[in-house]
Structure formats: structure tokens, C-alpha cells
Image 1 (tube, rainbow, N blue to C red):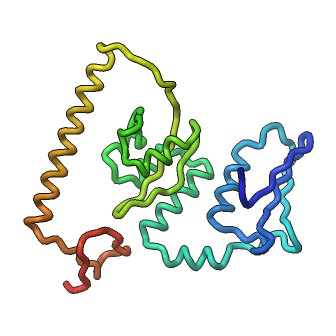
Image 2 (cartoon, rainbow, N blue to C red):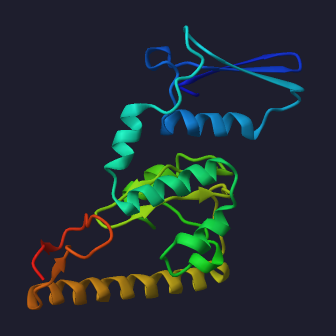
Length: 215
């Protein structure tokens, strides 16, 4: 349910009311996302009335939100921009191909079906709360940003061994690779001193590696 909007239907008329009178109905990221969601499906409405609670219809952009946006790193602003484009209906596949650094980016970001335990818990909590056809908010980790879309859900069930065998083999291979990579990274961290030189980076580094402004 929208927290910043009031949506009412009267026959073929859809009335959307901006409900932030304490902020003079100024736009922020949450209100923009809710508006985009509201206009995705207007049903059989032939007219849409946009109104605002309180004495002001809308004061424009929320000053506090604009100030906080200016303080975001380059990557944070890009992630926020991608989220807003998704809310406006830009295809997920196109944005993945354009912005994502993941190996599956050019394939539209598809990772296939996943179950509990396949992904980090912070991703699972978001993904399994989504309905098919909906998109998550931006999920931030120590070094990256992620957005997920759920296309379809399969009901729990039992599959035969012939069908399960190739899936099991692939999972075992993936686990072996992840374990080996984790061992190599752990060994490298102990043996190699890594420092990120932040002075010339075009964005604010937010990772966990040691930082230095000295060249």
C-alpha cells in the first residue's frame, strides 16, 4: 500500500492524491516510485485526477531529498537512477545490458530459478517477498548495488532423480568453485597487501579494503 499517496476510484475516474501535506507534497524518491507504480495500471479509468493534500498541490522536489542525493556517491546515484527508470517502465533487460557488471548482464541479468539457500540471505529476504512481475529496491552491499526482478514462481514439489541429477551436479560444481575462490581470496588477503588509492577515483570508494589518498 502506498504510504505517500491516496488512491480512489469512482467509476471511470481515478483520483490520485499526494499525501505529504507536512512537506507540501514535495517529491522524494519514495513518492516518485509510488506515483510511477500507480500509473502503471490505471485499469478502465478514462480520466485521472491528480490532487494534493493541504493548501499546496506540490512544492516541487523535496529539498532534504535533493541535498541527500547530492551527497551520494556516483554509484549510488546511478543505482537510484536505474531504480527510477525501472519504475517508469524501462525494460529490465535493457538496463542490465547497459549498466550491470555481472557476467550475465548481456543476457538481461537472468539468473534462473533460485531456492532458499542459493543466494545470500539479504538477497533472499528481498526476492522472496516480491510478487511476479515486480522489482526490488536497491540492495547495497559493502562493494556493490543490486536490483532484482521476479518473473515467475514455481510451487514447491518433488522431481524425479533423472531431472534432479544434472541440477545437483551443477550445484556441486558451483559450490566447489565458490569454496575454492574463497580459499584463494582468503590466502591472497593474508599474503598480499592491497590498498585502494582513492585520490583519482571518479567516485567515493565504499568498500572494505584499506584506503589511501597518497599516490
